[in-house]
Image (cartoon, rainbow, N blue to C red):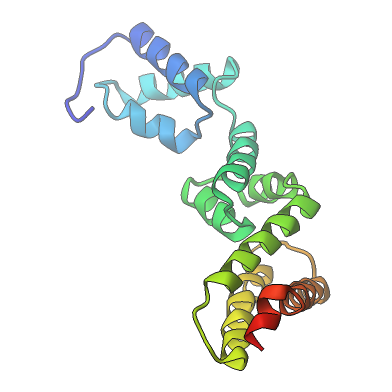
Length: 178
């Protein structure tokens, strides 16, 4: 879409309605798409208002769908989702609301699955060094989270860290490396 096209406002509205109906979009994505058309700023604003009024464009819905789908499909964590939504200029209120829709139990189960997989990928013969690498990994994943977004308090983060670590070191895989 690098070449600018001359289109009527009605044609552009129809194209953008299809664009937004095909997949949830945020304002930034729609504005980017609008740049490919030769329209005045007033016409672009009218089109965005039309999309909002007819419920083709809804940032709250976008943030919610984005957070849930990235968590389920790509196993992204809350920090990554938050950063991606910030990059799309979504308000911090909507980011917090979208992230709170991720079920905590499912989030922590996924976290434990990913950490278990990480344990299995650490190539280290010395058990203490392997545990150190694993603990460093867990601290990077859990420790930084609280300062970036509203996650459970640090006591819960510590509980999560220790239970995941204890579960791993008590697993048959870890016992073989001792």
